[in-house]
Amino acid sequence: MSNPIQLPSEVRAALLAKHGRLRIMLAVIDRLASEVLAGRKIVTVLEIAVGNLRDELQIHQEAEERALESVLPTIDAWGPVRSAQMLRQHAAEHAELAAGLAEARGEALARAWPTAAARLRKHMDDEERGFLSGEVLRDDVVTVGPTS
Ligand SMILES: [Fe+2]
Ligand SMILES: [Fe+2]
Image (cartoon, rainbow, N blue to C red):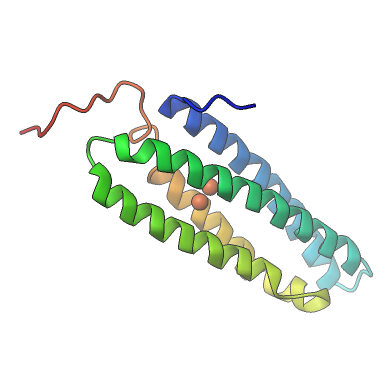
C-alpha cells in the first residue's frame, strides 16, 4: 500500500501527473462531443468516456483531498485556519464538478460538455497556480514562526 508520509514535492508530482492524465481524457472527450454535435452516432462512446472521466476524477479528488489535508496545514505561510478554509472550499468545488458531469446524457451531454470541461480545466489551472504550485509545496520550507 502507499506510504503515508510523503514530501510536499512528492504529493505535488503525483497530483500533477494525474492532472496530465485528466487533461488527455478531456481532450479526447472534446473530440467525441464535437463529433456527436456534427451528427456522428457515437453518443454511447461519449457517455462511456465521460463515465470513465467521472471515475478517474473521483479517485483523483479523494486522493487530492487526503494529500492536501496532511500537507497544507504544515505550510508555514498559511497556517491551520486558512488551510482548513481552503480545504473546505476545495471539497465543495469537487462536489460541484462531479455533479456537473453526472447530469446530462446523449446529445445534451455533448452540448453541456464544453462548460463542464472548461470548469474542470479552470479548477486544475487554478490549483496549479495556487496550492499545487512549486512555491507552496516545497520540501525546504521549515516552520520557524513569524518572519519580518
Ligand atoms: Fe482539486
Ligand atoms: Fe486536482
